[in-house]
Every structure is written in C-alpha cells, then in structure tokens.
Length: 83
Ligand code: SF4
Ligand code: SF4
Image 1 (cartoon, rainbow, N blue to C red):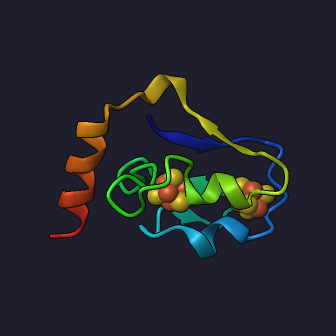
Image 2 (image 1 turned 60 degrees about the vertical axis):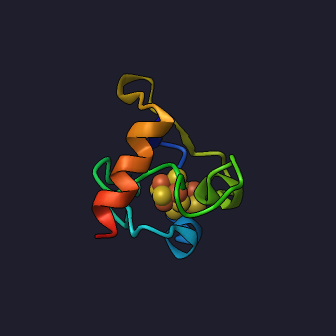
C-alpha cells in the first residue's frame, strides 16, 4: 500500500519527525508524501501501523487506493532506497 496526505492536514510537522525514510515534505497548504520514498514503514519497523499515521492528530494520512503495493514491492523499495 501507499499513503497520501489529505486536505485535513494542519501542517503541524509531527509526521516528518517520525518518518524513517524522509518521504514527507512540508508544503503549502498541505504536506506531501513521496511515493518513491515511502515504504509504509516496511523494512524500518515491525509495527504494521505506519509511524506517520500514529502521530497525525487529525487523521490526515490515509491509504492511497490508486497506488496499491504489495509487501514485497514495499520491501524492494526499502532495499533500493538504502543501498
Ligand atoms: S508510512 Fe512510514 S515511510 Fe511512509 S511516509 Fe509514513 S512514516 Fe514515512
Ligand atoms: S502529522 Fe498530519 S496534520 Fe501534521 S503535518 Fe503530518 S499530515 Fe499534516
């Protein structure tokens, strides 16, 4: 799966601090998740709930149904981004 940030974002910056891949960029008016960098935390943590989702105070980070990925694809992205 891939994630995206929706209009409810209040630009609080909490998610950027916990993202292990540097995938979240501060932007105006709402933050943006890089599809190329986000592994949905696969490879970084064992917890199935992504770090950014856990800290977002307004539930603005959701699954992007148009960019579904398998766990294998996410792990391949993690390896690519860390070699
Ligand atoms: S799911 Fe993980 S890797 Fe993706 S943007 Fe959120 S914290 Fe970063
Ligand atoms: S934690 Fe949520 S509200 Fe805060 S910047 Fe990230 S997406 Fe926006």
